[in-house]
Length: 113
Image (cartoon, rainbow, N blue to C red; front, top):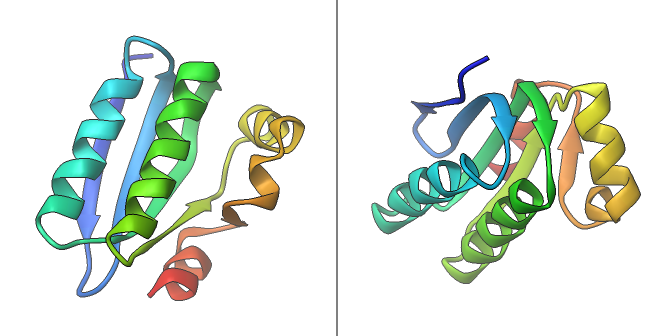
């Protein structure tokens, strides 16, 4: 599956839907997309990981980077509907205790909005 990041921008929260494999070759694309949103004043972000099939350490690094940058600009980050394999990685690494994770996009959007 090809990697893709699509952005749905609501009034106060931007949702980045991530599909495919998030790894060392695709993580920069996710980070750059999020950074561009934050540079434009959109610091409240939701990562919709429902279409993510794989995430390695580079992918986790990109998520952590986005989380920190969102905080630096006075925003916040939540994760929505991670697939079971991605949720396991987030739990195993302790990221699920640091970044808010929600079962669906509306709940995640409400939490950061």
